[in-house]
Every structure is written in C-alpha cells, then in structure tokens.
Amino acid sequence: MTNFRGRKVLVTGASGYVGGRLVRQLLTEGFAVRVFVRDKNKISGQSWFDSVEVAEGNADNFEQTKSALQNIHTAYYLLHSINMGPHFDEIEAAMARGFAQAASEAQVKQIVYLGGIANDKNISKHLQSRERTGKELATGMVPVLELRAGIIIGSGSASFEMLRHLTHRLPIMTTPKWVSNLTQPIAIRDVLWYLTKIAMFEKPVSGQFDIGGPEVLSYADMMQTFAKLSGLPRRIIIKVPILSPRLSSLWIGLVTPVPTALARPLVGSLISEVVADPKKSIEHLIPHPKEGLLHLATAIELALSSTNSNQVETRWSDATYPAAPWQKAQSDPSWAGETLYRDFREAEVSIPAADLWATVEAIGGKTGWYGADFLWWARGVLDRMVGGVGLRRGRRDPLHLRAGDSLDFWRVEVVEPGVRLRLYAEMILPGKAWLEFRIIETVREGVSYRRIEQEATFSPRGLGGQLYWFAVMPFHSFVFPTMLKKIIKAAGDLNQSRT
Image (cartoon, rainbow, N blue to C red; front, top):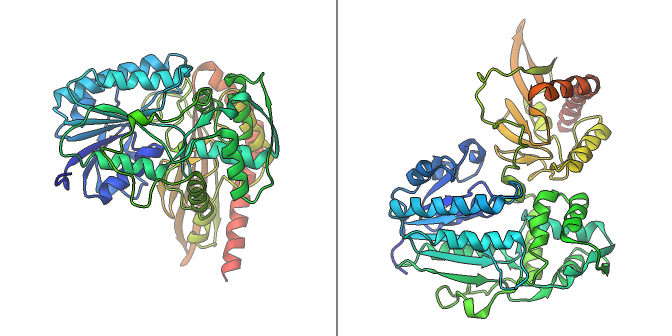
C-alpha cells in the first residue's frame, strides 16, 4: 500500500445500494470523492453530499463521462441496465465500452468493477451481461479489476429483502428446484472492505477475482437460517419442478416488495450455482478483515438490527425505477408546453408547524396515506399487475425522509424540513404526477396560524393521459379531501399527546 490519502476517486451509481455506502467508506478512509450521477438532487439528502464533488451527466454520453473522469485515479463502475427492456445486455455493453474509452482518454489509472460470480456453465442472461460488461470495460487502456460477488446480504439490499419477506410471509412454500442450488453469500460490510482496499493499491491491477463469505449453502438453507434468527418456526419447503425463473419472479413480485422486473435477474442468478472459484481468490492482494469474513448468521443479525432500529443507510429502491416508455423524464422543464391538471386543497389551522410537518413527513409505509387505504392498496395492486413497483417498497425510515428516498410508489423529489415535501410518482402512468405538501406561517390580527396546502399535479401523455385523469377524478374527490382532514387530525392528536 502507498500514501493514498487525498487520492481522487470516482463513484458511478452513487445513488444505488452499494455506491451510496461505498462513498461514505471512501470518505472515511481519506479519499477525495467525486460522484457521477444523472441528477444531483437525487443524492442531496445523503449525509455525505456536502463532502463530495458532484458531476452530473449520463454514462451513455461520452463527453459527459469523459469530463467526469478527468483527474481521477480510480474509477468505480457500479452501473447496470437490468430494467431497461429485453435488450438491456446491449445497452450495458455499449455503456461499458464508452466508459472504457472515456477512461483511457482521461488517463484514469484504475477501473474497479463489481460484477457477479459466473463459474457455472448454466448462467442467466443477467449474469452473461455482467460478465460481458467486464470484458467491454477491459477493451480500453486502463487496467480493470473485476470483483465478482454472489448474493449480497445487508440491510436494504434487494437480496436481503427478498429473503426476509419470503421467509416471514410463507411458513409453507412451494418453491422451484433452484432453492437447492449452492450459493456463497457475502455481507455488504465485506464487499465494501474489498472495494475500498483496491483504491489503496500502489500500482494498478488487472484481473478477475471472486469474493464470497465463509459458507457455501443452498438458498433453502439461507431461508431456514433467517427463520431461526427471527424466532420463526422452521419453514416447510416443498420443491416443485414447474416454477420457471419467469414464474418465480412473478411469484416473488407478488409476495415481496421487490418488483418483478428486479426479481427476474435476481432469480436468474440463482438458476446456476453461484460459488466463488478458489483459483480466483483476491486474498493474496487483499487479506481478509482481521475479525474474518462475516458468516451468514452474523450478516443477517446485523441487517435485522439496522432494519429494526431504522438505521438503513441505503436501499435497493434508492436507484430510480425506470420510467414507462411513454413517460417523459422527471427533470423535464416546466415550460415544456404540457397540459397540467391539478387538485388543490388547503386549510388554516392553529396546530404548531412542527406537528403538522411531523405528520406529513410520516406519510406512506406503515402509516399509510391518511384515509382511503383500500383505494391506495388497490392502486398498488394494479400497478404491480402491469409491471410497476406497487406499494410494498415502503420507506427507508418511518419518520424522516430525504431527497431521493423511495416512498411506496413515489420518489421523494424535494424535502424542505418544516416547509415543503414534493413526491414524484413512479407508478405506471400515462404521464407524470406529483403530490406536494406545503406548510406556510400566516399572521392575522396578531394571531399566528398555519396554512397547510396539498396539491396533486398530473401532466398527461397524449389522449390516454387525459382520459386517465378524468377517469380517476371521482376517486380524487374522495381521496384528497379525506387525506388533508386526516393529516390535520393526526397532527392535532400528536400535539395533544405532547402537551
């Protein structure tokens, strides 16, 4: 190792599960960190936001990518396009080639890529694409070190959420035969250990290295371990041969918060055995942590502890769910000439602003949407049926929100504590939708009041979007007034409980 403090590194995918945690780890070690994101507002709520340099742009834009890579020593490639339709593999390959060329021209010293273990002959299209991405990154002049991991266990990871909800909700389950395939899970803590240590190398390294935890076991074994640690009875698992990966992903989409589109590549990765090859060990370059690699039980206990104490730093849902093909970009300017439909409600109350804000900020998740819960549930089910995220994503934290958080089928776009909350809809829609709350202090005749404003905005996409708005208007006339009344009531109850 050499004196690496102050060395400048770039993290792509910083709004994602691994990237968001890696940034914090690199800062702790003394690196100068630049993040490459499409929208800096998406990461503005992160605790490390003011400590990093932000480069905005798209990785499929060569000039923007090259600009982000200027003066960078080590670049972390944590991007994927698994939800971008049936040709996601071609999209990933082209993006990786462009990144390799841009890194070469910017004279980057090292590229680090986190891929997936693919040692079995029978691998999914997702793993094939991950493997191809590594090869495309290596087409440039910059040395590429590829770390290949299997199932990553940590609070908020998609794999952990899938394991947790399947085990909790199904005491008796019929499962596909892939639950008997061997896998080698690894704790997110250990993944970050390896990723961070690479940036400390004195000289660049090229090669492909597998990383995994200390245990090799089946997915069924993982579920039983989780059940035991959660105080649940041993799960009854009945294996059947008819559940294809596609059917399995639909089933997981119904039972867990992980949407079918994301479950599909996760399941695809389990149809083969995902076990690290000892010949590809990285131990001669990076020794294990002094306390050793975490066993599955310890990794699960840490993940459960963070989840139960609401200390989840990043979640699988932090990465923006792709918009439907007919939806324009979230960041389209307001002057784009679109028709806008609004449902505006307001009320003036004497309840303290702090109690109003606490009530608004707690919306969604286990709190619900302040009335008409059945209609919200039905809309979530409908969204799931057409391939959307539904309501099951829930919240990262039950009380507090930050910009970029997923919130059921919304995304937190703006948070101004005590003043304003704006949500952007990520459900499948023929247009774009927002839901905004504002709390405004007013004084009348020397008496202070608070005005709470609630506004739903919809920008339709073509005739279908306009018909959609008028079709749901009857429901809005019940849902939105009820929501505002119950927010005020809940805020009043909260104020009473404090006094």
